[in-house]
Length: 176
Image (cartoon, rainbow, N blue to C red):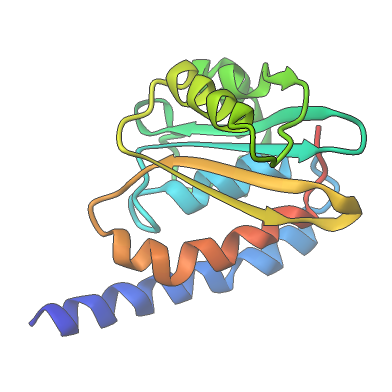
């Protein structure tokens, strides 16, 4: 029975994720494209993540920039954010958590052996008040690094199987 539930969830997820590339191409002009994507990825009908923060780390320019945040209680309650772009953008400007993430503008994380980056990550986790956090990083274009910190959802296996590979799509969004 669990196998069937898992396959149904994967099929629903595949159907939802299949529309992302189309939405990204049709809306490439949106400076806050990453907010739309994060919001859809974290929604209950996708990966069901209660809180997430997306940041970009640029070691060359010693810059860590918060890009987008999602917190379920502050989520956009309308059906389709892509069809209500002005309303969604206005809503995200009012989201305290999104603004908290976006306010991060700090020196970059340098992945070294001295542990200082671990302290900085812990500071971010505390700043974002995350419980049972998971950190995922990936290499992006122009030698940037994507950083996604999120609260571990109940169905963490589907996150492991699919979300971590899909996050690379954020690499195509502008950092605003």
